[in-house]
Length: 314
Image 1 (cartoon, rainbow, N blue to C red):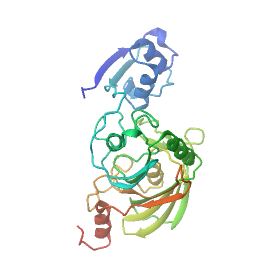
Image 2: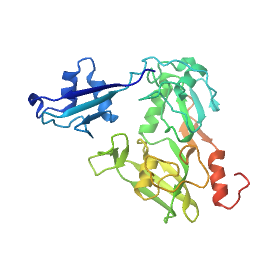
Image 3: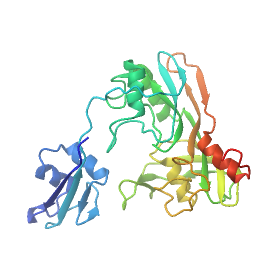
């Protein structure tokens, strides 16, 4: 991959009152409107040194700086990367993703993805759901480990996406968070949207400024400075569990985006201390409920063992 291109422009008086995205499209005709909006959304555009939204109204006379990463290829190339396959048939594939693997190509990431590994393992997924994310029904963050379902046919993809939209898919996670969580269980119902000050992050927003997000949680075990917690998603927003727990003052251990400044855990977790441990959905062909579980990975078992005073796994 080539390095990102850097551009610096200056708005003229005629730009006053014009939306940032519209002005950039006219100033840089080689970039499509969708590409411009994606750059703005990813925080690659600054006006007078500050990240702005696409709808930001210009005043005229401002410096506009862009960092333009190379466009990822439209067609994903298969890569023979080993997958931990939990279940597979002609319609679906359930995998256990390790922490550190990106699910599909995006800004700054073109290779080594789960999607490329799936394409090499099951070439029939090409074109299912999209050219660069074959069969990907839902995703996990790079630092999160655990269960994902992949659709191998277009019919299976549509059926599983419909189940997600109807909140009929059960997704349960295990997390280790900073601080002692006081409640034994609870429900966080708080909208999530882009952080207005850091466009590459998400944040809890006021009603009307984000999409509704609901996370249920149950405390499993408390320690002096940490809590082992179980979470269930009712919705599936970007970074939802991480944002919701951080908004309550309990960021996930290892989360440098939402828990910066928190003490370093006594045992490294190699990612964030978040694991997709249980997945339940209705099979798109047989219509039978399918349930899958994934044990807590050793990277998190080591931390729990240390917190419990048992250093046999350290």
